[in-house]
Image (tube, rainbow, N blue to C red; front, side, top):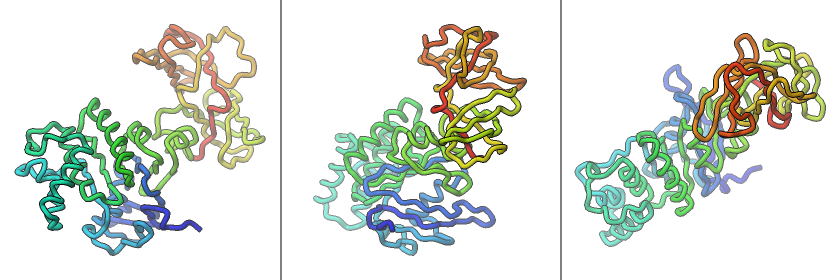
Length: 366
């Protein structure tokens, strides 16, 4: 049995509804001390409600929230050892940076010297030393976000909750702040729980992530595991781009399924079978675009795993080239190769074979 004290946060079968809408439906998670953990999913999947439940801003209909092994389900937000950074930074416009960061300490009636020292340390952590006297309107969006982080960290909470804090920033600044967040989390060593709908952001930041959909957790794990071994079609489709091929299972041997395509001819394909499937069952084969390669149809392929098709479109994307290959009357596969890669300058209209290894494809449950 898992020792709950080993976790910074434990959610036990939590449920939260707003009227007839169930926002969180039986979610259980264990988040380790010092972990950078992301809640990832589309709008309305329940990730922000889950964060609000941890913070105490939303009351539970069922289940339990434990912080450091202690139930906090009935503990008010101000008595929980957590702080939250919101998408809208909610800085006080009439206060200086120093006054904003030290606000919580003043409410707790800390001494002036303690406040000054703690604020100085917090601003050093977020690299805003020298900005103490400026007001929020005099700061850039990235600087305002750093002030919000410093204000949340100045009390050194056990857990920092972050609700899409980079969403209001432009792309370049968002990427810079993403690196800063990871550095900061490693430096302070506390647990970060991060809500985002951005897959790249979650992959770059997280030690582990929970992919959510419809108020439930679909899969939990490190980013590479979730990307390479999605548990179902929703996760495969939401985490990055992928190709789906409808198939019927013919046989399964040692974790590898022999299948026949449905609706795109009658080709036989092999794929990893991590879900239990019996001969005759329908399934979906998934393979990532970067794991697929093109060869001219005239070249012999032997018993290689793949489909014949015709290049419908070619898009130059700088570092990569994206091909769309028509493999049926309506079906297309996407192939992504490095610029100057193995396919060279394949142009639309070319007849090709689209090939991939058995180890790079898998069968999914819906």
